[in-house]
Every structure is written in structure tokens, then in C-alpha cells.
Image (cartoon, rainbow, N blue to C red):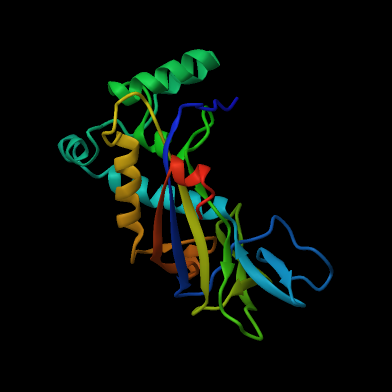
Length: 249
């Protein structure tokens, strides 16, 4: 059950980012396709006859949420209050038992007077309500002959946590030095607080500052040196409601 908050829109913020791969990157398919495929293929699209890697927005969102959550969790309540005027990061578990109308009421009350809903859920969404923050897929920006390679690693027996004899796993990965572009789209909702920044607005703006120039990990095989990337903000566009009605881009 996902609750949609149909509050009025105050503004929409569209922030463009680039991702630079600093190490090999593996954002994988669920399974190999075809006899000649690698054991662990990556997500790809076909464009002009070439296979190009793509990073799903859901993968970017998950990695960013984990990174941001880890850092915010280390801050004191006093610092969280100073940054966001809100100190609760995680939603109470018993919210699952409430009706959809009750959850909506709890969310609105939480914005006005810090309540049961955590700031991270208010920003990124949860199993109970849709996110005001949308992450697009990241598409390759380089024009190259080759974007991916196949690498071999020893296979680990998960039951024994030991190396399997005479067994290799073939991992497909995007090369270091590639550039991807994606956007984060934030819908600022009117929670009846007037023209002041809500805690969610503050959290989003802080998130953008947090991400600009940050090195972090994406995808799988991190323990084997995969996934280190650098993010860089390229553009930040704020659209008021009248801009959206007028068709501004």
C-alpha cells in the first residue's frame, strides 16, 4: 500500500548530476541472457548498434539513501535540529498497522510537529507513501568504441565462506573513466506552513550539497574493488508553479 500525498505543489527542483566511474562498475542484470553472456552481466541498452551500460535510477537512489542515512545517523539530535529543524530520522514500525487515511494524517502532522515519520522516509519515500524525490536512470555520455569488459574472479562457496576449487566467475563491468548523466527531481509540497522551508525542503537542499563532488560506491562487488564513483552537480533548476503551467523547461 503506497499513500500518495496530494498536497499542493510549491515548486519543482531539477538537479542534473554527472557520475564518473573511478573503478570498474558492476550494476547487474538479475541473470545472464544467452550462452555467450557473462555469468554476471551488467544492465545495458542498445544504441546505434552498440551495447551501452546504464545505471537504473533505483540503484542510484538506493546507494545515495544508504550513504546519506549513514552520515546523518552519526549526527547528534542538536545538529539535526540545527540543520533541518527535525531530529527523527527513522519511521516508527507500528505505522504499518494504520489505515491509509490515518497514515496521511500522521505524515502531515509529522511535518508540522515532529511525529512518527522519519525525515529519511519523508525525503526518499517508503513502503507506506510515495517519494517526493525522483531519480532518473543514468545514461552514458562518452562516445567510445567499447564501454564494458569481462573480468574473472574466484568463486566463493557461500556455505563454507571459502574459495571453490577450479571455479571462476565471469563478471561484466563498465570501464573506469566513463561519464554518466542523471537527474534528481524534487517536488516540494505545501504542508500548510506558509512560505517557510519545510524540514523536507531543507533535507533535499542539504542532500544536493552533500552529493556534489562526493566519492561513493555504486553497484555490486564492492569488496573486490568495484563501484567507486564521483558525483558532480552540473545544473540546478527551480520551477515555480507558474513556470510549470507556462510550459517552461
